[in-house]
Each structure stands twice: as C-alpha cells, then as structure tokens.
Figure (spheres, rainbow, N blue to C red):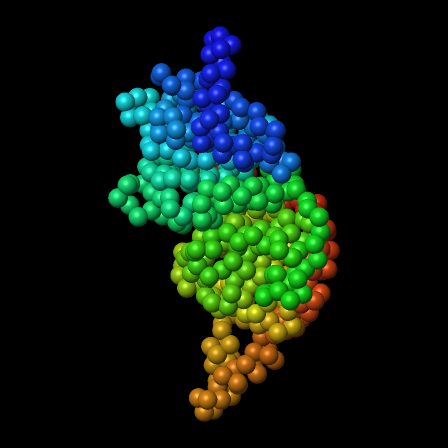
Length: 429
C-alpha cells in the first residue's frame, strides 16, 4: 500500500463515528489502534480496536463501526476483535466492547457462525481473569446479544435493545446500568473501570480518601467515602448492590432494605458477590430483611456467599431473620466477621412468629397489644447483644463506629488465604 493510500485510508477510518467514540473513551493521546487496515471484502473491517489508558489505567477496547457495512459482524471483524481479546488476556488488562451493529454478514454463511463462536470462546476464556464490560449503543440482537451479555457488566443506552429476536421486547436482567445516551454510557464505563482490578492478580485501584457523609440517607452512605457508592442493577428489585470506597479502597456493597429478598434481588446480589470473589474484592453486606420470598433467590444468594473466599464482612442494620442470616451473615455464608447495630434483631423467625412459638402464653393479649409484646420479646431475646452472647456474631457497635471498625477489619483481611477442594466449578447457582 502506497503512502498516499495509507493516508487516505487513515482519513476514512478516523472520520467514522466508531473512531471518534474510541478517542472519546481513551485518555487523550493514549490510543493505539490494532489492525487499522484489516480488510473485510472490499471495505475495511467493521470495527475500530486497540488499547490505551482510561483515567490512567490500561485498557483494551473495540467499537463496532456502524459507518462501515452497518457494523455487521464478519469473519474479518471477528479476527480483529479476537486479537484484542488475546492481548487483553496476555497482558492482564480489562476489555470494553462497544456494540453498534445491525447484525452480521449472513452471506458469509457458516464462516460467520465460526466467527461468533470464536468470540464467545474468547469471552468465556477471559471470564474471571480480566474484567469485561459491554456497552450496547444500539439494538443488539441474536448471537451478538449473547456475546454482549457474556461480559461481567453490561451498560445499555435506554433507546437500545438487548434481545434474542427483533420481535422480543428485550431483557434487562443482564444489564447493570441504563444510560440516557451514548455519552452517558461512555462515562459510566470509564467510572466503573476506576473501581475494579485490572485482572485477577492485582488489587483494585485506590483513590484519594474522602470522609463519609454523616448526613447520608442510609447507613452505607454514612459509612463509605462520600459520593463513592455507584449502584448497579437499579432497575431490578429493591436491594442495592454496587461498588464504593472506604478510605479510598474499592469494595463491593450489598444492602437489603427491610423487605423480603425476591428473585431479581437474588440474581443481582449473586452476580456482584461472584464478581468480587473472582477478582478478590472485599464484600461488605448490610442486612435488613425478613427473609427470601422465593427459593430461587435463596439458592442464588446462599451459593454465591458460601462459595466466595474473598473477604466478607456483614453488618446487621435491622433484621436478619432465618435463611437471610444463614445465607449472608452466618456460618453458611462463611463470613469473616459480622457486626450488628444495637437495635438489630437476629432470629430464626420474624418477631411475631418467634413470640408465638416461644412465649405463647404472653401473646394471649388483645390484638392491638400483640405487636408491642412481640417487640418487647425480641428486644430481650432476639437482640444483637443476645446474638453476641451466643457467639453467632462478633461485634455490636454504634453506627458512628462502623467506618473505623470496617477499616481495621479490611486491613486485617488483606492477607486472607483460603484453600478449597479441587474442582472445576460449583454446580449450584
């Protein structure tokens, strides 16, 4: 290729929307392109790919190029993207995939099937080794949707669809964040990268410590660095999950809100715990729940916590009843340390049921007085102090003490090591 043709080709590629997006995503001047002149038939491969830094952190990325053959997947594009996956694996850096395509080049027939298969295999190989983010900018349908949903976290532009069929309404259960537009999606991906490790052998990047907000709306906000709690899967269920920082150290956060834990809650809690475990990020669980409302949620949460060997600290802020305590704070969860606020309740049953079971004679009062009787019983017999006396929690602390306690505990657990039985993977989940 002559200098003139190279110059012309470079001008054509850099003028596309995908190239402009990639340049917006990476730090200024850091982007190095891979396979810039790779051809797909008579045109260039339908994606821009390469590496650089994002907020100073190394990262690999690709963006399907809607301006070239509608970004359609082809064997040439797949080969280019596979190179990015291979380099991310070898060098231990996250990969961010921007999906903006109208499908695949069906005229390539079975070669297209092989191309998709190679990409899915690469994504599976990287799973748990380096973090993977998918950013879906336009409708992502069929096999492409499977590939996109295979990432650790999916960011979806609100007008886009992630579905197996054009006639399907789409599924949001795999989506971690909904973004208003392309620019918001890019910023969400950049922010998320600052909370997670580069790979499974490194720690998450530290940030400057910011004091907690003493006037925050919840215990989590009053404990973690102010403004650091980024919530994921907000459109699903009632529980809150995401990442935050304590004295600059990123941690995974799970917070239940007093209601029972439903199936959507169970799925997103399990998803976050498994990610944190794969990349050795501590998990802080703030518990206030009467129980699970379905077996599926109970199974997902129980298996995720039981299998996780990363540092796990649970804080009981309200009620921890029956299976919830067992799954998220007790010996079944294999938590390292459990703290309870003084007003917390730890019980095998909810307050009313426990009172009827354990002091039926005292519940023989007018209905209007039963709730008070049950609460008085719980205060005396199901309290945090009683749980500490029985040795099922380690500490009772006031809320203002939580931050310093958690910092001490996290420091102590930095060197945690757990030997597990040799096996390929768990079959529960």
